[in-house]
Amino acid sequence: MKVPFLDMAARYRPYRDRMHDVLDRVLDHGQAVLGPEVEAFERAVARYVGCGHAIAVGNGTDALVLGLKALGVTSGEVITTPMSYLASTSAIVLAGATPVFADVGADLNLSVDAVARAIGPASRAILVVHLAGNPAAMREFQTLARRHALYLIEDCAQAFGAEIGAKVGNLGDIGAVSFHPLKTLGAVGDAGAIFTNSERVATHLRMARNHGHSSREQCEFWSVNSRLDALQAGFLLAMMEDIDSVLEHRRRQAKRYIEGLTGVVQFPAVNHGAKPSYNFMYILASRRDDLRAFLAIQGIDTRIHYPIPIHRLESARGLAAGPIPNADAFTDQLLSLPLGTHLVDSQIDHVIESIRRFHD
Image (tube, rainbow, N blue to C red; front, top):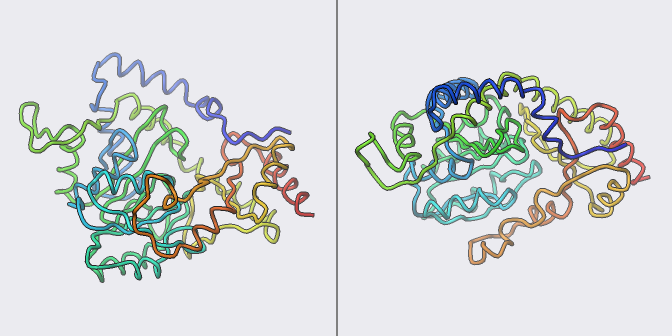
């Protein structure tokens, strides 16, 4: 039995007719950048997350960079995680600040205690990543950020629709999300958004994504071009109609994995009250590379997200990093299993049975 990690054609297939309708509509009105589709998507996604404003941008990295700049975090230190895709760190550098790495906990997200130890006189913000769609301990981070007068920034790139008391993205000063095709809600290309409840920040961001223009003629400050295309906004709006059922499907598959493999492999901890979106289905396996090779023989495609922690990348040379034993250890054990609407229960069961057989 073949179990592909991804099948993008199958993912898009249910939306083909709706996407062709979007194409026709955009071709008819001719406004290919920003415009009514983007405005409609921003309203829908803000309502879904429960925040006051959603500002659509070109990608998730731009969302982080522009969000940091909108808060004025263009210098000083930002405490963040070494276990993530590198954009969570590169965005800090691109905004003009300095990343400081803290260790992770059993949920694979930033440890509140490790962050508390890393706070110093130059600290300006905490950038939390909800890794693989598993929400971090946001109530504790809110308390810590308030105590030290730090900004709290959520990287929700892999966590759209995840919850911990409320939807992630609406639990800090800003939230940034990616709608890359591989995300739980993914476009047919790159897209992103920034969430905020601040009218001032939202106003700034709408200019910042458009070169700093306050009008066609006037420019208030130098900035980049990170406008979202109308087609991508329309495609996302079409796919958003099914987001709750997609998330429920992923959670059912994750539950099946957990019930079938508890006691065989480890899973990242889930914080009390959290509902992960399971952008990735992580396991922790002591013989990860051997297991992956065995699963490949069984027709099961897997991934490693991510094989090198950020603090060990060549580009991170010279950045501050205290002792990070958990991140280093977990990186050598992490394996992402196939999960998604392109799979049926019998395929999930084949993965479970194969992993159990490997460990017998």
